[in-house]
Amino acid sequence: MSRGPEAWLPPLVAIVVLITAGTQTVAALRVTGAFGWQTDAVPVAVPPAYDAVNRALDRRDPRLALAAVRDPFTARPTVAVRPLVRPVKVVANVAPPVPILTAIVWDNDPRALVHWKDRDWTVREGGLFDEFLVVSITRDQVSLRRGDATLVLQRRNLGD
Image (cartoon, rainbow, N blue to C red; front, side, top):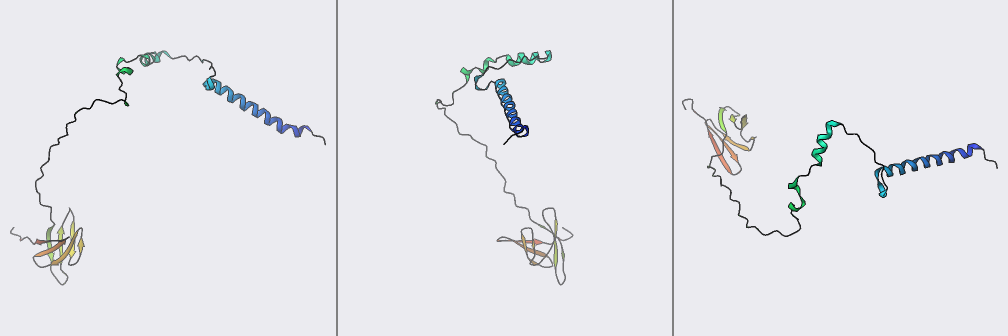
């Protein structure tokens, strides 16, 4: 069985690629200083405009000495802590807003126009609007129920 050059070519190409990858990996590790290998110092020319920045970075601030830093794991002397006294806000007892009866349309199916939360609602007996149930509508008033409370809205006379 004779092997020609075409049989040897793929293994040779694989060996060359493996050696090239290994050489590049070792060179990259050498530049980074991995495994304690000495790095080749690469001279870097700093433009003169950055000299002032480099000098500012090299300066040491004496206020940032390690002696001034407290060890968080040592016990501190206890300090008497005064309770925080906050001023108490006095809120006047303000009556909650109530809907305003604007108009009543009295016919076989009476309806009322009620103004509530910057909106006009057209309501009928048994209907719901916002958080109110319309209990009854008469010629002069509308009865509403919110929870257990009943609220009666009176029609205003034109002279009022």
